[in-house]
Image (cartoon, rainbow, N blue to C red):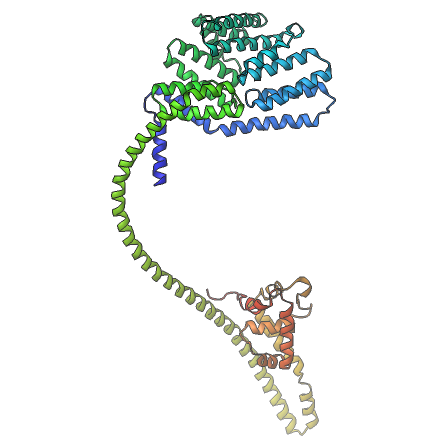
Length: 539
């Protein structure tokens, strides 16, 4: 049931309530895809940051120039990603510029501080920071950055105040600063087109401004994802101010995609897109995007952005709640119908389950019996194999002894007939019982190892290396191994083993106890021996 609800909810999310056109829908899908890969992009950024930190750690603290360059790169990674970390590296830049006794770098550090203060929405602190900068000491690229931040600060403050008293003054000041920035950039360059487009859009010359900004995107020039996001967002806001929402939405989405790819947390596009989707009735996406925008603003520490999001979030959340309630009501109606059908299905399932239970119980009994039969068949096969080997050998040995007896009888008869009694005694004395017994053991050992070729290594695996029992070079099995070989054959009686090996019962008992005591697991030792498999036994 939970899976069904999840699938249904996903389908509702994927198709907004109000269609925005095929192109916009496909762009929204692309945006959601990129958002799903957000952790991958942030992982790459964290990898870059870690690499820079490692380089910084490996660089001598007295190499101020290289330390300063690495701090600039780390600041650039953090400036639109996390305010607190960017602030830390701004302070390091200040300290390094003092150590280097370089005023231009010291002022440049103040400019960097101004950027993150402005991004965080602290206008007064931005003005305070920028007031400490003497532009005359800066080189042209530093001056451009200084003028652009001053333009942004005045322009953003004018939009924030949004009144007819103070805003015009801020706009006038911001135009003066952007003019200064344009004057220091090469005509036709990406920076020149960007600043010119922003100025034209601000003074009301939107067609010209939009044309310059659009040229950057259409020119195919290599620009950063962050700049691409800024240009798309600037164009979109211009279109929104001209009530051209259909043209603005795709640009906002493309800006948001670029922000996700560049791991930019201080962003306008996603919040503005959520606001526009809310107005068009796409509540699902609007709520999802504004939640993400809030999360980004919290992560970065953008105070102004939090205020902007806080103004619209309750409205979107309320609409989302109503929308969710309507969806729940619809889903509930479906669930009631499904429940009625499911009840019948469950009834049949219970009946089937009971029958299956009975069937499984019978199958379990049959399976256990089959296992027992298999085990019995295995043992019978093994016993038959052992008997086959030993009976064959038995007849071979007996046949040999009968031939020997026959020869002995004939020899004795001959000697008796010629009354050579001393020769008879000599024949009897030549019978070597010990050698015959050794031959018997030799035959037993070879047949046993033929049936159980792994017996010796498996036997020794039950002991520590120092306690293992291996036959000498001239032996097949020694007495220790032979005792347990007989046990593996099923001869467990100490008296029988003693008679076979020509030892006393006590001696056999002592042998067994001594060997078992050295085993890793004495209690299971004999069982392990009995589990050694015979080769070619019937399975």
